[in-house]
Image (cartoon, rainbow, N blue to C red; front, side, top):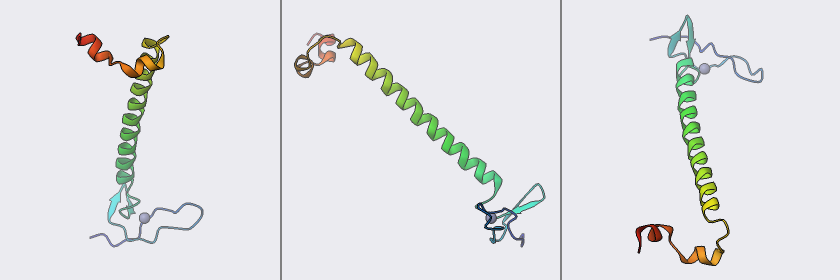
Length: 91
Ligand SMILES: [Zn+2]
C-alpha cells in the first residue's frame, strides 16, 4: 500500500493536498479525488451527459419549428380542438 501524500496542488494557492495518496500515475502519487484517471473519467461522463442534453434540445427545437410551420395560419382555437394524428389516421 502506498503511504505517500497526494502531490496535487489545491486551487487558489491553498498549498498541496494533504490527503494520503492511494494511486501512482507516472511517478506521482494522488489521493482518490485528484487521481488524473478518475478526473478524466468524470469529465468524459459529464461530456457525454452534456451531448445527450444538447441533442435532446436540438430535437425539441426541430420539433417546435416543424409544428409551428405545419400549423401556420391555423387559429389557436382550431388547433386546440384537433389531433393531427387522428386526422392522419382518418378518425
Ligand atoms: Zn489530493
